[in-house]
Length: 133
Figure 1 (spheres, rainbow, N blue to C red):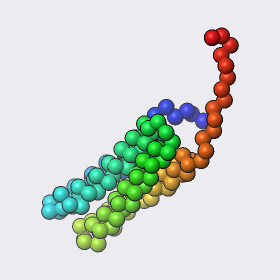
Figure 2: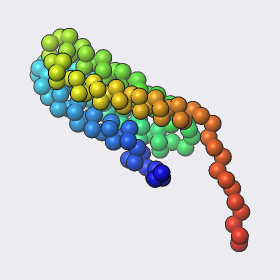
Figure 3: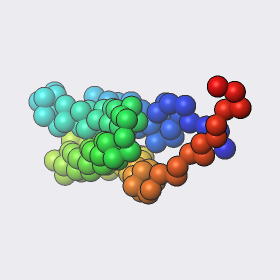
Figure 4: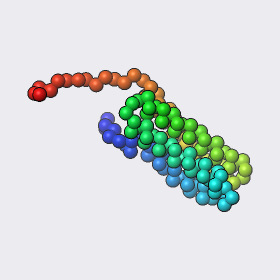
């Protein structure tokens, strides 16, 4: 198993970045009147997912990391809700948002697995004394 060196190595972060691109593409099709409404809200929620994964990873404590992953999960729910609102209002078709919703669902499950891993007690690293000081 390869060692993770950065949040950029996390599959969930990579997928979240792809989701941001997809959300920006979808929101470009919204009516101009929604530029400061639903479009802005969806874009901020999508960016928040990737940003919170990165910020949490940069924190010094697992509990802080878990907190940011939890925020990212909240942002996924917010994004899904906004997409469904846009569909109900007739701004976006079900066919257009289906792949975005599917990606959001996958990311949500990945975040839940990451959160559960972070909430498990950390293994204490094996400490070995150097042979020479």
